[in-house]
Length: 332
Ligand code: SAM
Image 1: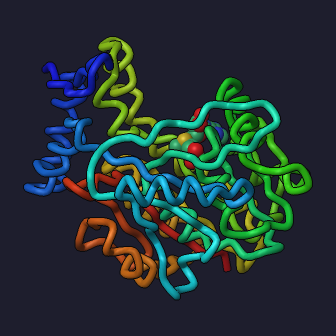
Image 2: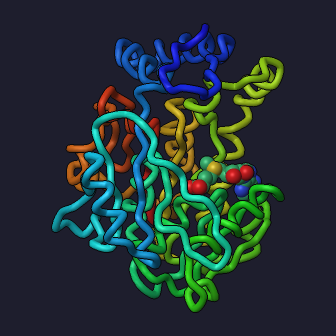
């Protein structure tokens, strides 16, 4: 299935039919009619949007002026505690990508391009100054950077198991965070499933931005064999996600909370994993995030019928953010 591409000179993205067929079956069952409109956005990159997260450590009023001229406006601005004043993220309704900033030795980057829905797990985590924070699956580091825009944690532990991605994470941190602050950050390369035993009851907040099916990028897998293999391995993801969550709970201090997030629509990797944790761990309880969801509902479309401790962002034309599942739990 070839896509029409109006951007000159860019290679065309091609949809991987095996993945699309697989999603078609699963998501028609799980989402009904809603899947049709979500599919139209996911399979049409020309309507994708990109948000711009400003780096408060390298502020530029010139950049904000340029963004204004190009039709961007600040998102998540409001008096609610979920919307930290220091988090500056610009979005616009029209599709297109603002140019990425090149690495320049000795100079901090001014902004990070991301899917605006990626900020919801960070907002739900509500990190306060001085809190000890663990980002369990951190590479390439978009959410770690966003956490540091919102607050100054006490200790900030960013972990990534994959060797190459861990280097990428380090590079992201070095490109966005200035020197005195960077000393508060520990980057490790551990299996997140073991951190609970290695660092028991050490953190007030844990982010579990789990490895998942990543629907948006899977749809454009260029290697059919690899895509088929990944689809087979997909069945194993809920077990990995469950183990990461169990480890995160161990790493939390009593009274601390965690946010679990994925960028897939798959119920097996979202609500089912969280329900299994709630049913099997007597020391955790769900935390209501519906007020936060209401505070940002202007910018996002959520799946209706979710429970109060979870949300699922559905990409829609003009608000092409997501998919993003977010759930919040507290350790008693
Ligand atoms: N939080 C990141 C961000 O915002 O830029 C994205 C994280 S991505 C969804 C999930 C990450 O988990 C991947 O980089 C993957 O390599 C990593 N991962 C996979 N298995 C892991 C494990 N057992 N322990 C820790 N990290 C793992």
